[in-house]
Image 1: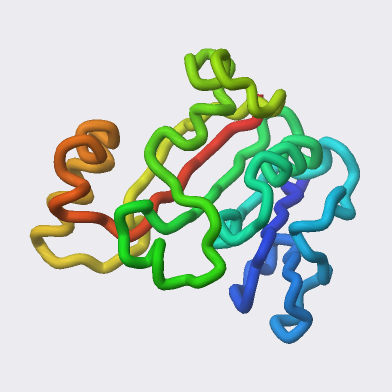
Image 2: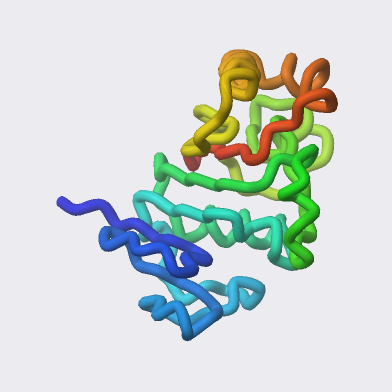
Length: 177
């Protein structure tokens, strides 16, 4: 059975395996929809995988977006969210960016994490299965070493090294639980 994949805020990227959703009709998405408008036009627990490449930070309500992703994804679904890293200049180039992301941002959705238990901003639950810095970037020698360190120990990188040598993006791999 073929996986049902959704690419939210797809832009011009061609992902032939995914249903492409974008607010801009000029990029020829499969569905034109403003991701700031809820609910999204999909059934509950429909998708096996959802991709958001550099779009979630531009939306008005991070919590509602995550709740909507939770609603339309199946239990165990893979969620891939790519964002500019908060220390990167890329986080400030895009004038529409409203949210910034650290290595712990998605811990607010992990029911085993103190952030989830203490603040309870959402009932939606996701586990971060992996995160990767500068995935797909061609880097020089020094940044390649820093990326290696950051990917091995993201919290160490963020606390100690990121203010000295900021990486550009972070990709979060989540699983709906």
